[in-house]
Image 1 (tube, one colour):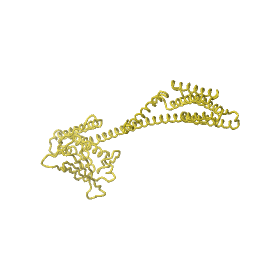
Image 2 (tube, rainbow, N blue to C red):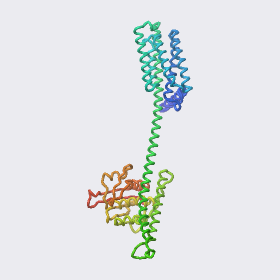
Image 3 (spheres, rainbow, N blue to C red):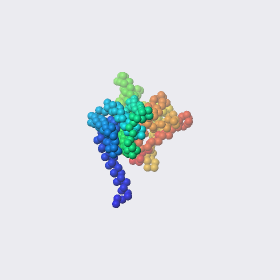
Image 4 (tube, helix red, strand yellow):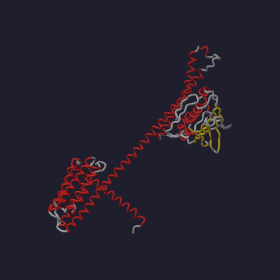
Length: 471
């Protein structure tokens, strides 16, 4: 005895085996779906079913004692369908045969109508089969033309039978008619059902294939869009972060050129306050920062491609902030901004991060924004503290603040929310989105609070807080 719980598995296995066997035979009989079009396979299947129907008609005619004309008609259908099937299946030439074969079958059916009892016989059943074939095999104008031919032939036969009933050969007996019509009716139903199943199965297969192709295209489209978005983000990041270092390079280069144009006797003149070695050192520092930024972008691209991963290390925050003060010295001086730094004492304040990314792309972006949107003479504060086993760094400005409708979209991809700074500085709209992506990459968390100037005229500004796990 087979256990009841094993019956569904066995039945499912048997059903799957049956489907595989059916697929194998349809592939042999009608062609490989991967190589032969659906229309070609449908036409070949129709011819095969007509052949089967013709063979069935021969046995029916023998069993009911049909006339010689009926045998001739059945053998004609077998011969016509088998020749057309062989040409279509083995040569691949099928389109030129469709209309001639269709008209010949209409003629055979019309003859069958007259020698098989007219409307009381079996001919009408096969007209349904031919109509289904016309809908499936023909396309566009020829579909309508084929259906019109069926209508014309059928109408002509009905009118002919009405006005000239003597042309219709009746059955020899009611018993003969019953056997002929009942067998033929079942045969027609089997042929029609088989054709419908084959066509539906082929349609379902093609639809599944197209759906898989569509899903593949959608996935590739998403990959391309992600790659474009990543490239745009990296390009924006490069432009934004390099501009900070380049500002230092340009400012110190301009100062160096002025010094170089003066007499060498004035180099050491205390009243001129020119420090050429210091300026050149700043130029070098700015160039090194640009190189670090480019290396960081290469690292990011490698991480996006999955060829490397970010390596975290313990970083002294005070050292990072000293680098930032040097990098942004000219911009802070230009807007007369005071940078106040407060870190825990006496132990050095450290965080677990990637130093170049943390300095050049996170804090650099945040401090750049704070400078851009701060008013001349105001204060920017950078604070660090420990709390609940975590380490926090905040950047606080007294700038124009961020309106609520803009704040909601700051960290959403696809939204550009760049605004004009307090001295007309232009923003790209990508800065905070880039910062957020980097912070998440480092396993940290960012929080933003802001009071827009129009709502809080006395205490406006923005506070951004970054939280790290304790290192």
